[in-house]
Amino acid sequence: MTLDYLLTSIVVILLPGTGVLYTLAHGLSRGWHASILAAFGCTLGILPHMAASLVGLAALLHTSALAFEILKYLGVVYMLYMAWSVWRDGGQLEVSAQAGHVPATRIVLDGLLLNVLNPKLSIFFLAFLPQFVPQDGGESSHMLELAGIFMLLTFVIFLGYGAFASATRRYVIARPGVILWARRGFAAAFGLLGAKLALSTQ
Figure 1: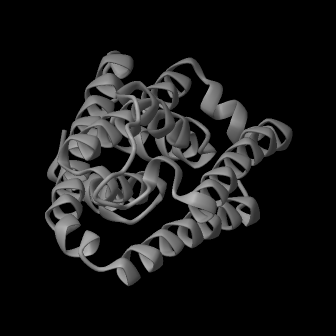
Figure 2: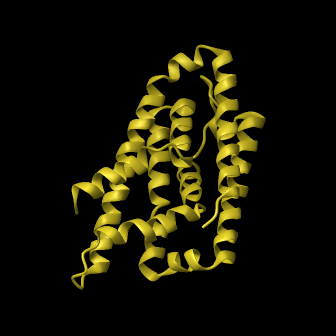
């Protein structure tokens, strides 16, 4: 592992995407504990992409336009569903002092699905990690180590986002206008990310 790998990973993780948005939304809507679950779910969503890279499925996504498009549009549909549900009534991302109970498993599962249905993560692992894997015969173990570090960094950074959101939750709840615009903002952001994914290419 090199300093270049750590710095590049941190920059990639810090860039706002669906996982960051999802964790922030749960921090605002239900506080610190929910944001931890959201961050955990998003981090778990990296595992299938890591496994895909190790067994060569990421290479299939990279070379097969059909496979890439299928996974891509599954992700688009899911993000647009999230946008619609938040815009309509807040759903599990409703921001209020009496937000309804959402099972921990649902928060984790939705976070996991958001990342699983993002083909760009598999391409990222295929194109990014091999640059830092020494060619010494132990490529698979090195890949696992680097992917594990990436997952740990993801979880820690997402916890930071969640802590920030939960710290501002009281301010947001006390202002109904802010709640409405926060909900619309999250819905619009999910919609824009879905549109961005739909327009993306390999």
